[in-house]
Length: 262
Image (cartoon, rainbow, N blue to C red):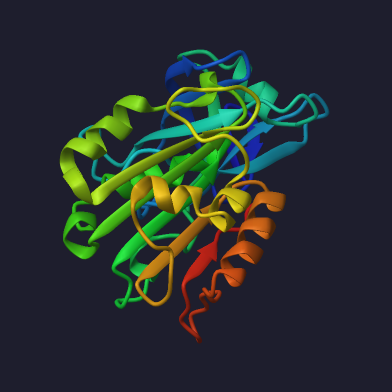
């Protein structure tokens, strides 16, 4: 434990400060944080932590939205968070304002990175729900993605159109990647003129997503990263198996993978 301002901080956490906050909805928000952590790779996550009212540390994993080589430098981190009414940490993070202190995991983690994708993949599909779009936005900023893949598909599923965040980042990806990049938004609880309606697993199974982007989702050319709540990850994985794709393991390369830090 380290002693910071008379607070015993667990090893592995460093002090950070809120640099900026954007409130997308009442509960959905982004925090920009200054913290000196180890260099991360696009797609990875770290922990955010605070003390609760009982003096106990509460830590949760959050992905970095920004690329490590973005202009502000690697110690300027951005996170997309939704405040869960029953959560021990996220409502407290939502109460933070610019200048407030929080604690950040010094060592990033995670294998949902470009380096983990097999060389035979020609099309990258990134399927996300809610705040899980975060790591994919970081990956989209990587300079190598345009040269490596013939096609890049980002699918973002939300409940309401107000949760379709980071439209400026998606527009930047369109400009940088041109015809290689395809974005599909999915809204489940209301009609939206430019979005599909439903859930990702069903929209893949009935091939509505594939039809919208004009691409087949098939082995061996396609590689899929899944990031979302556990039910979405489970159901989407089962759908991909039905479509003939196989789960990717380091010892046995396949066609799809997910990050489990929920």
